[in-house]
Image 1 (cartoon, one colour):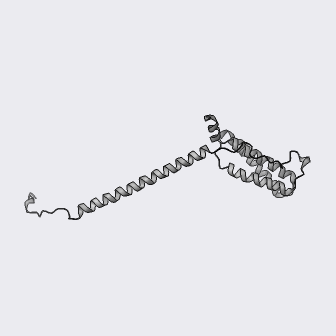
Image 2 (tube, rainbow, N blue to C red):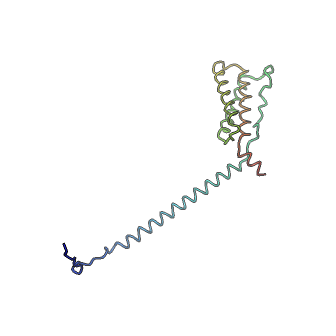
Image 3 (cartoon, one colour):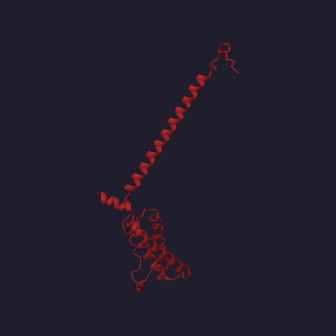
Length: 164
């Protein structure tokens, strides 16, 4: 066990001849790959910043939206046909689907949820009696109010107004 190892008798060998060029090639490949990743990340960040800037600077629609001149103001003066009421309701529903995509402040959230629940109830009533013009008129009024509340509840719009 006390045998000493005679290192002088060992063959001397070095790294294989193609080792250092292979390492240099791998380092170059990784450097190029890292450069591509960094440029891609930078492009993604610039894209996000541009999109956020465009979305924040986009003008908000008027608080009440376009007025529905065809919506009757009282139940006695409904001179509109059922088709006209449905068309007005469909226009407001389309605008509401866009409004629902916006950010809403927490203070308005409860009232919006109540109005959404009332809209669901009204839609159930319309499913039972689809020819009731008074229910369609109420739906138009409710959709108009929902559109106004969503537009007023957009906290980004308030921030833009406050910054002016």
